[in-house]
Length: 505
Image (cartoon, rainbow, N blue to C red; front, top):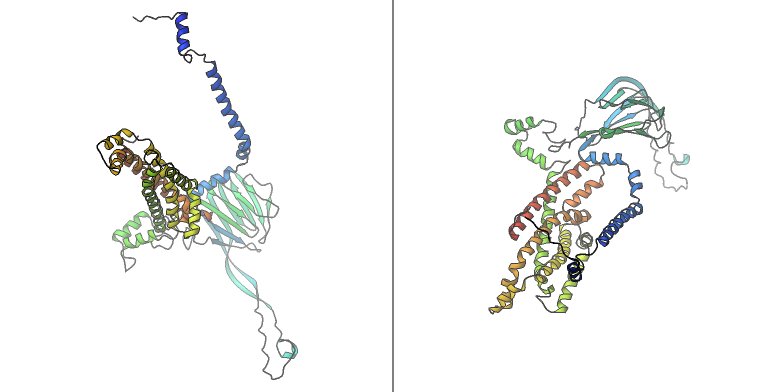
């Protein structure tokens, strides 16, 4: 049975005099909490106003953001329909089309007609007749009547030609979206709405009726842009209709359009490799297929993998050298190891100098000094990490337990033996753990500094981004970087867990 003992007023006063904080009113605590919460809210409101976050969100073009993300996981086929003044048409595809050298997709319907028409061809200008050689000097200009030259004549001759021309083109994006071009009219259908435009075969396009929400035209007569969302878009000009039809996936990821395996299904490729007739008499079909994958002109797998390995090596070498240099210097920076104040300050300021300049800035500096390449990246990582690891190592030394060191000293050990047996066992797991973490972190950092010319996959990534059209290649390289970072993070965590003697959570 539990009994409750109540304190009398004298006992309460005695406790309050000895421990005033125990019985202090909680009013001040509530006021302090409310003040902190109010300060946080005021700061968030100020940040919202100062950075105009509401204005930015309201004016953001989320459609462009969606299209940009779609470009990472899709590709476009770009037929271009050229319209002549006589309303006939011709069809071209982009250079290096993902459909191959002779594209004929089933979503493009063509009506052809053989016509006979007269074409005006400008005649070449007649060459001037050279004057005969003469010993007398003349001040008359060459080609003058007195100089004996014939006047150049320009004539246009008319030629009758029989040609196979396009009279109607229908491009079907999906069930609800299509474009039809015929008789100088462009009819676009999307989401149940039909929009008709007139093209003159020169430089003017005019809408018939009001523009729908998915069509834009900056000025009358100029091109009209049709946005169909994730399925693609189109540009209509007076003499051309540029179609951008988007498809999910990465086109020609294994074999480019120049490969003999292009356009074949996986089953057909396997059959060719295992039992098919030899394509190249100098090598097996398996060797040819592997060569075509490595040297894929569109995806450049071998070059991307080589640059990724270069990034990994760059991060490893830079971190390794930084750890080796920071290790002896940290003993000079630790006050309890090196009692000299001047030595401590000089080494610590050296560490501050190295780590106060960002790795990106060091990369710019060394790219200028050594030229583009991995050496600049290794040097940038080495300089920055030497300063950071040196500071962390010296702080770890200053927090060791001196009892072990004093115990080694008490048996008459030399100063070197004191550090070896009294200090290193305490800090070595920490040193190794921090070095492993920086190696994993520098794999990401090496990608960023590579973009400024320090080599590796960062430079390759920047080159793909600059084209503003190869976003699927960018996504491919980003996924490879993520995969490498995940692998190295797992390896680093496992190694740190073994060094620290505990399991990773």
